[in-house]
Image (cartoon, rainbow, N blue to C red):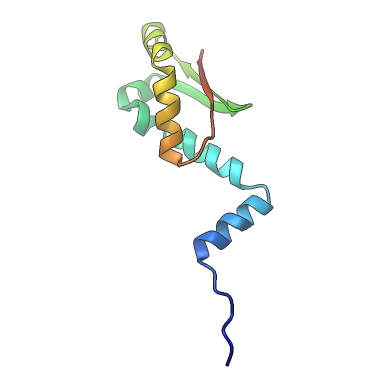
Length: 96
């Protein structure tokens, strides 16, 4: 009997996702879904749209005062969102 090279299932899945070009869209989806948890429920109530384009997260906030406060916390939010998905998905956030 001979031993075969065994692989961890999570490594196989990561490799497959990367090869098929699905890793980035999956990470982007996870990051958008993490917005409420990272920003908080109060901020999430005023959030109407979220999307990622060219490593920038665009978030539409309906309250102008909150939008200004979040703009000042932009670097912290980027860091916390990337930590949440355990990958460097975004480099900036724009509020509109």
